[in-house]
Image 1 (cartoon, rainbow, N blue to C red):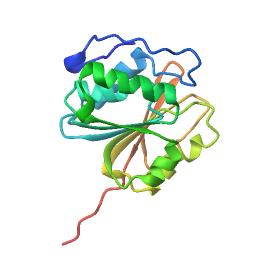
Image 2 (image 1 turned 45 degrees about the vertical axis):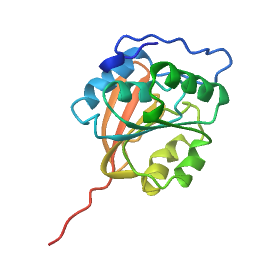
Image 3 (image 1 turned 90 degrees about the horizontal axis):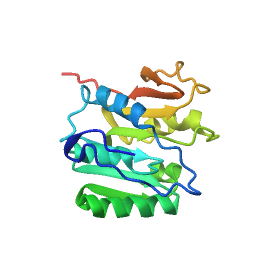
Image 4 (image 1 turned 120 degrees about the horizontal axis):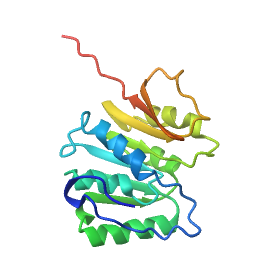
Length: 186
């Protein structure tokens, strides 16, 4: 695996995948996603959350591009250990908060709001269809913020009122949702 852009561009790392319950986003799909995000996000001012964080790739990409406020959540101890080691190796500990806990508990636990949330759950997660609504109803996505959900072709969110875009890269789909805008009245 490699970091696609920013100051760590080209940096390769090898997670010890043996017995990990993860499915990392491919470099090709991640590169395509970050090409889109480059036009939507000011990486240096955004506060981001990575749910089902796995190897931590999304956090590394954001920090590599200048983000100083990233949060990683995964319940698998092996993944969390690896991300802590990578944070030390890259010298990014001040920019990365790491939580080893169930994502659904974290959504209820946190009082923070984020400009960007990435969720890359296991494709067979039984509650995957409910994830966008749980995130949006928990009020953890800032108004106008972006939620990107990675999923496979067997999931369809076209019915969702907050869905703004869907991008497909092989068997990887990214569904984009927007946080509700606050209307101002004078």
